[in-house]
Length: 48
Image (cartoon, rainbow, N blue to C red; front, side):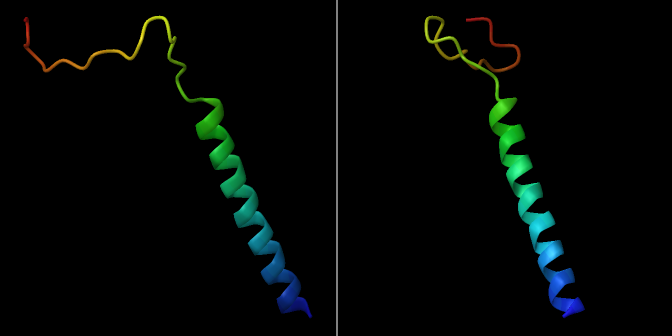
């Protein structure tokens, strides 16, 4: 029974980490203002 309990505890901790990681990625994602649009990517040294 002890092994099952340890396994479930480790499984719960892994799932909690995945949930926390997904929340961090969603919460701290940079916001893009729709009025400004997406920033244009330019190559280094491109002056056109």
